Image (cartoon, rainbow, N blue to C red; front, side, top):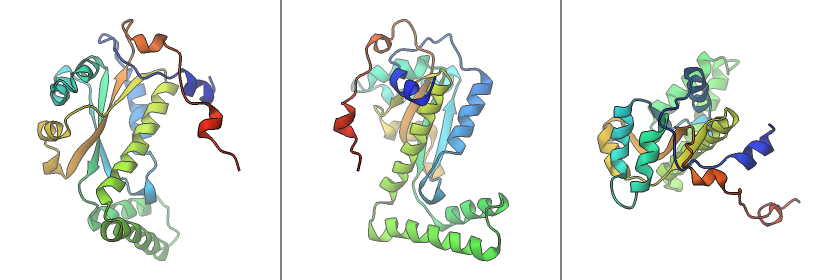
Length: 218
């Protein structure tokens, strides 16, 4: 299957088979994809929590108990795994230095001057969003969505069904998982597993606006 076929056949899963679990080797592949997801200036302003146990998934599902979000509860409880995508609540200099130091350990810089230049550039963009655009939190959450997109496509390539979920109470989830104390806030969820026979969405044709409507070639 080529990438276009993956895009055309991937459906958001509406109901999971709770008896089917993702093999551990594929979970490891997905963890690698999350770790290597792209982000602006390699800022990596995120943390990913992966829930596999019934207790952990039930705990996350507490954030969907409000009637507005209740349809998402079964998806979370019945999925094989649930990923909580978190953004940092601050993008402090210590984090920028830690990222740059890791790049140095991974051999990305030919000399100390190159490392210093990279840190200076990263600080510039972080400062731009903090002081001038004043949208640091929004900017960090944009990076989190890049990781979500990476995971969704990777899951489809592995034959794993997925559901991106924004319908939950982030305040409750932050409290349940103690995220604020860790300098994190929940942004979006992804349920992963295998669809059940009850998933009506899998039987419906894929629908998107025509190519000419959404793509312009210059």
